[in-house]
Length: 338
Image (cartoon, rainbow, N blue to C red; front, side, top):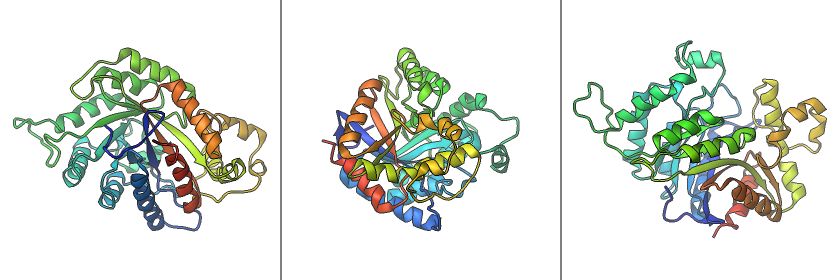
């Protein structure tokens, strides 16, 4: 669960969630170079894992082929855990995912995580293009998950088997932004990662359900939670808030149903949204969803978050336009780890 070189913040490891954001005027190729560079730094700084999220039909996000970019970054690093946060299982045949992650685990043994979500990570037209049947829904997720897990079991009598995949011990996580996956993770005795960085309203309820209903399994003896946090750190509060306007513009575009590349910071974010629009994204712009500020501010607010949630791990997402600013943000966080 935690690799040997991982350091800790207030007793828990910290990890990185990357979307391989494509900056305005840049390219996916450059985003992947930035991801490799960040992963190497994160490894040296003592972060525990480096995950990529699956998204589709978004010109500002390059992490659509999740298993491919995981393999690329794993080959450029040595110890940090790599994984999906997550693979949206309804988009894929479970056998394909078993083979892909079985391949990754064979190439990089003991370093691969498989986080699974039940949302499509896209609109309906894109979901259809991904060859999901139109009647498919998240309610089929438990059956899809059971099928996927069966492919990792050694069963010479099975009619269909995954090679690579069969007999391999690849940690499976359930991801969620509501209580559905919390209940399922508890029932199956799996680790649970909650998307508190974009669904803070349901966070405490989901965590309570997970802990209250957890059943020990061969995979996990006791509950283990990892919570998502949007965090942007800089040397001063003022600079951090300026950097954060890129993330704020992205939130606004998503609410407007607009897909764009990742935008540079602006001096006055209030000039681009109405009071109503600002209110609709307000919960995503403040603690506990988002932490923005100087090292002192970030440390205080992250400590409060860990204390409130009793998280076993936090995974940090930082939408920052300038690569050097993003490195600096994670470096500031790394300086707080023991």
